[in-house]
Length: 126
Image (cartoon, rainbow, N blue to C red; front, side):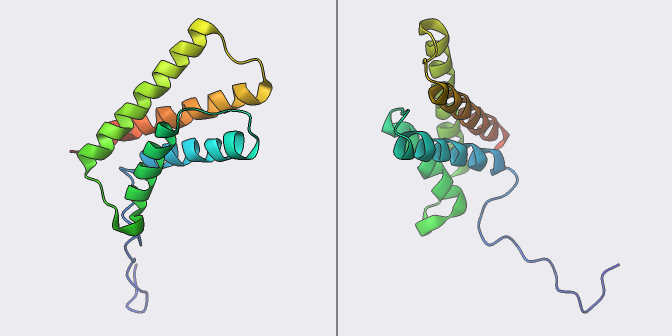
């Protein structure tokens, strides 16, 4: 039972909601893996476009700098990242995984990020 002295629940400070949660987490994983494995360790890297798309999605969901993409655009970018992840997985399966342990760990983390972005895009409504 809610008493009169308790404040009403405040809405979230940003526009991130449960329908964009997986997309946001996937983008954060892709950017985090890039920072750790490429920028800091210098072990691994993909094309910079993938990181730019992940950053664009993350900034849009968080509403940083007034950037707000429509759900349809977020879906398109999430599907794009899912296809990129699938392409990179097929490429690794066909031509062999990297030899280094850090590279293989980075691959797995990137695949998880790409998959979450794809699943998050599917959950978005138009």
